[in-house]
Length: 301
Image 1 (spheres, rainbow, N blue to C red):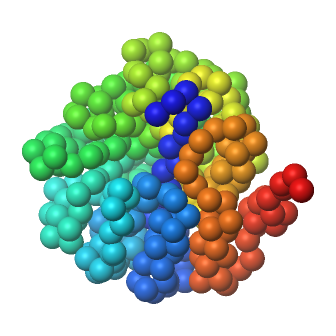
Image 2 (cartoon, rainbow, N blue to C red; image 1 turned 90 degrees about the horizontal axis):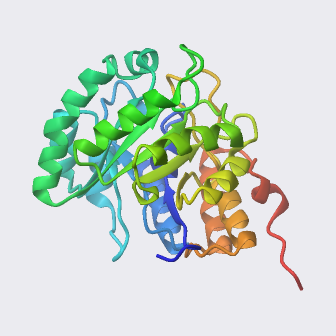
């Protein structure tokens, strides 16, 4: 991976769809994942093994993962909350997992009914099991820039949670602006603290929501800091049931356009990606609201 290479970690099939109220068929989700792989995405978070009562939209996680046609060279991580989720994911054929906590105690309590310390205790056997199986793993740190219940979140809290997750053995930590309040100065503050604590850029991903229209500006700031992995959701879908007001994720197509203009290599074909974006917009029954979805790409003749 060169200095200008960027990893795009696609979260559309999981984070993008989890908050949708209208049921989406397993076949439509599988088609979405296939189209994302067609576009060149090599990391596609497929689904979540949380309780079906908590996230009804992803109640078909086992069925979806079992039916998934895996492409060579493509990783399909799944979210697991605990040992029970890991058991279900293993039975369905998982081989890469994500766990999730937050930098805010109030949000962690609302989201998973645990303290941060309790969430780490729950993850320990899950991540140990994953390591023993040789699986790749990731840890999410939500509300790293602000919390809907607590308000501002200090960078020291983010650093502490990230370091704990890395100590438990995750391969990378995704730092999330769950409610979309961050601006570039916040990115410099939080990422600067993480790097200053000895966490390598290659161990970090950034996960921006575009609630207030700052996601692309935040990516640009993070690129300047040496971050090269970004989460995004094709079609700009997403939201969190435990984060009031959280709008969709950074759209993958908008991210790809920025990276193309910046001369960053990423391996994703924008035209093919738009096929996936239009597919999921059609499934959801609404037009694309992303910037590139509305305006299209711009290329010199």
